[in-house]
Length: 319
Ligand code: 1HE
Image 1: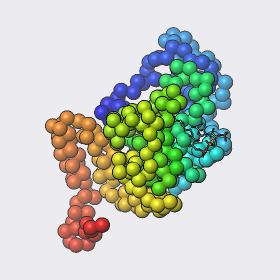
Image 2: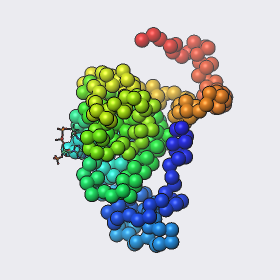
Image 3: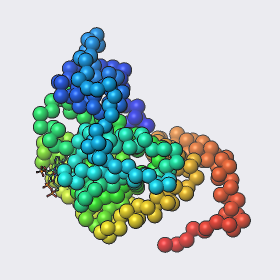
Image 4: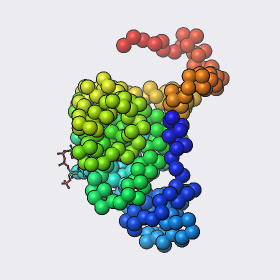
């Protein structure tokens, strides 16, 4: 399914799924699209695109760059949603900056941390962008999110989420595409789409049921139920629960461990494990055996196993 999820996403570059878009959408999508929008926006199969009202290159303004910051320290990249005055609401510009930060990661980076500035991880979709959006805008919006979240989920580097305060709506959808989630005591999880009259549109209905189950997600969306960090972490919203202010230290500790893994193991975990989990058992077992054989044939595996057998490396210790 996770493979299917990628496959099922219509390729907007190949077909003109949306017959007409209002000028606001065209501008927003052009601003989002790193190729300038021509590959993604069609007004009809044989109609020429309206000429862009934008500079030739999509160079972000300093203000846009500030929306999501990227800091690299050795093998660890820290990417921070930096819009605390709007509770890190995810505007299209934030989504685009998030995409750019991941796209910019040099090969030396082996693990990333995604956090939110201020007391909240993210208040979800920037609702101000929806106020005069039409149907086509809504679709474009979702596809922009899908592209970025899929790239994060199926990207090269494992990503750790640091969650505090509101992790709601699209913020929870973003958190659910990360690989390891750490919740501080202040974190709370909710899907207020029901109250707002909308629906999840950032891949939440695909990813969240795999973390927390369909019944729990239905309840959240129907009743507006909010889960605390303690409850939430026991139900799969996060794998770690830490006290106030401790999440970044924990994230760095975990990042160090992840970065020290053999690269092929991390590759297998990110790329093969989700596919195997969704495959029928026979296909899954075959895929697993192939991946295991590839990993253990690598010199890095041979070196690590030799080190263990020679008592030169750490044993597994009880916690
Ligand atoms: C926003 C947003 C936002 C805050 N879009 N501007 N998400 C929601 O329904 C959650 C809406 N937000 C909240 O419930 C609260 O803001 C919080 C509980 C997260 C934080 O409360 P608080 O008291 O700390 O902050 P605040 O005073 O409510 O908000 C501060 C400012 O951020 C304020 O703007 P200001 O100009 O009046 O100062 C808010 O309007 C603004 N703000 N949240 C836009 N979400 C792909 S589909 C996904 C669908 C969804 O994500 S639905 C869930 C949307």
